[in-house]
Structures are given as structure tokens and as C-alpha cells.
Image (tube, rainbow, N blue to C red; front, side, top):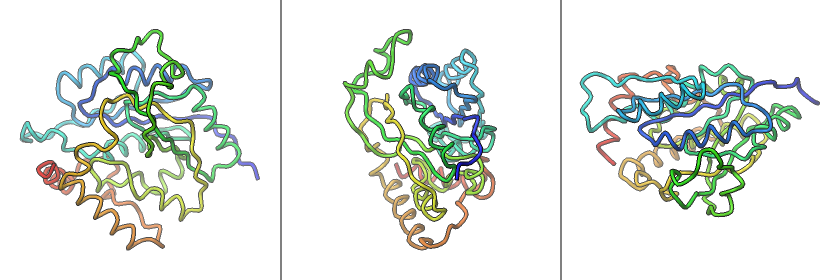
Length: 272
């Protein structure tokens, strides 16, 4: 049975100390969508200067709603990334007002029919989640001309990367599961696919995205002591709760930095 028509979509981008040029390319690709985006939220989790100034300028020029999560006083300067990636994501997911919420990183370019395809799918049935895979762009993003660049013009020189590049679901479902898992620091929610399955939602792969950052598919933190420990914790949690759609572990704070998260983040930074 067909559900009511969904009419709006929000894009949520967590950000920390990255090149704002990548984000501007991402915004250009959203401007080129065949169906317009209703809301764009960037959650800057305590970036340092000049990154925070650069990203603020881009947000002002493109009308992006920027949430800035302030650095805690007394934090050592070499431990700036004390917010979790997923803490930033949840701050944006909770604030988003649209029917659909699309969660991804700032260093992505989107196929011009990405939003149209997602709307068409959800208007057939809301009982689904869309994911996207990525291809790596093999040059520096700053070599591209902002005024002329398109998705199609660079796609053929990219190399397949795979993995999850974005997640898109209804606002109702994001709020039911209370966002993504804030116990994890560097990665997206590895437990998301299990909860999709337990809720008997359909899994759909949307248009691939172009990943603009010049780094390998496995980040250096992936094989660090902290990364190995996180994966081990995640796998144990999934095995222990494989048949129970347990509420995600975000300390019931939805993107706020608690003392517990702060202590854990500082510990993980030392294990990189």
C-alpha cells in the first residue's frame, strides 16, 4: 500500500578541521539536484582556526545552518577532537525538521538524481532505508573549478571504494532509534544495519557518491589500538543484542558532550 507523500529532505554533515573547499564542492552538487534540498545542517564539532572561520564563511554564502559545538575549557591543544563524529551527527539529526534525513560527510559529491531517486523510493513505501557507496577521486579536490565542475565530469577518473558513504531514513525512524551510536568515535554506526533488519525495513542502495578526500579507504585510525578496540566492542555488542532492537548507546543526550563521552574520547585519542 502506498504511503503519504514525503515532501522534504534535510542533509546533515558532521565536520571537524577539514578542508572547506570539499564542502563547497559538495554544496555545488546539491545545487545541481533535479529535486531541491530543503535543509542543510553542518555540525562543526569544535574546529580550530582557520578551519572554523573557513567553514563558517562557506555556510554563510550557501545558507547552511551551522551548529558549532564549543571546545571545553582546559582541553589540551593536542586533543582537540574530543567530540565523537556520531555526537556531531546526532546534534544535526535531532535538529533536522524534514520528512527525510540524509546523513553523510562533507567531502562528497552527489549524482544530480540522488535526491529524486530517494524521494521516489520513499513515496512508494516509507519502510526502507537508503545507503550509498563511494568512489575515490584520485586527485586533490582543489584542482577542480567550482564554477564548472559536475559529478559526471569526474566520475570516470574515480576508483571504487565501497563501504557506507551515507544513510537516509525517515525522521520518524531516526527519532525512534535515537540517532547513531555515540560510543563510537571515528566511524559511522556499525550497528545501524542490524537495527534496519530488526525493524523489517528494506535496504536500498542509492546513487554512488564521489569521495573527494585524498586518503586510502582505511584511515590510519582504523588499525590503531583505539580502532581495533572499538571494532571489538562493537562486534560484542551486536552479538549480545542480535535479537533485540535495543536503544542505541548515546547516553540519552542526543549530541551533547557529557563527562562520560569526554573521558572516553580523550582515552581514545591517546590510543591512535
